[in-house]
Image 1 (cartoon, one colour):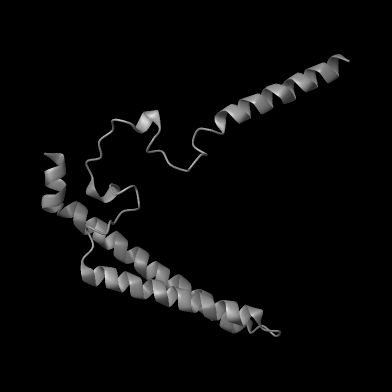
Image 2: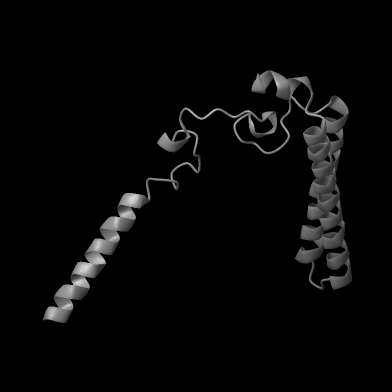
Amino acid sequence: MKKLFILGTVLFSTSIFSAGNMGGMMQGGKMDNKPMMQGMQCQCPMMEAGGKGMMTSKMMTPEMKKDMQMQKIAIQEKELELSKALAQDKIDWAKVEQLNRDIAHIRATNETKMMQMHYEMMQNPGPLYEEKVN
């Protein structure tokens, strides 16, 4: 009887504890409205605009936006080809592998470009960053 009581108490306390903590970071997936984030000022323009990543639309030139959009479309086209290849009765695994490699190459190229832009921005912050700091 003692063992059953102890087991019940442990299960009950565990479920109460987990239910109380689920309302923290799990709801909405955002930290903006949490008390620990209130009142904090972001001095880095790359981290502003709702935390959407390193580059915001304000920081990207029209050429960069167009290039990113074209590469996004290219990835979507490759993913559609991949879906079609996988939906066939006899799957050509060489084609599937090549499509996966193509998608990975496009994504890696994008990631490298973003890293280069980030590095250049940190080396030469420019007026946008200086306005935020001062």
